[in-house]
Length: 252
Image (cartoon, rainbow, N blue to C red; front, side, top):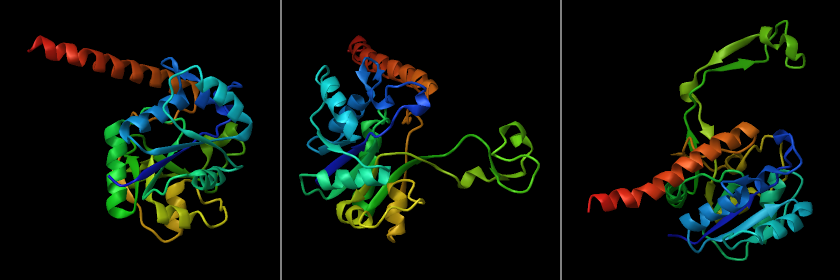
């Protein structure tokens, strides 16, 4: 496999969690979320350089927290104001000379090794690849004339809207993986509001992006409810891993 580096962006402030502790530092199954994310990539991509990008004010906290757990080797870089700026900081912090670079949300700790490697292999072939899943909900587009507006939530249910064909929509996840030269060149521009993820930055530079099957369990932990679901998924996964060898032995 090509030389690969991983940039894990962990700049969340915890506002949507409704508490002071940023979500990347909260415990999930007895380990910090960020530690689990780092561990997932260390397991899936042995030997990869891993750089974790944090707000500068959070670096001392993470240094102290990680010392209490068995966290896979990684380096730390201070991030910037926007996610775009933090990815640029991560690119500058790379010490190796990778052929591929994966960019990962710090609060997506449950991606499987198989999915991670699947995206990496697609990027090695096509230069840029991202994991996606098909939506299961219905969608409506708002913003037309109507009595209600998004600025007035109490009347928002009367806002003019129309349905969208969900068969053409995809939910985008991470890791997003790119050939190193493509990603580095794409991030040489100034930040624009339409840069919602790394794929949008790369596409703006003129490169197409391959869509690869993601996983519904590859959750981005944003709300308290997300943690409840993640704990259940993690417990089920660990129970399966524990029971697997025992079940095999029973049939020997």
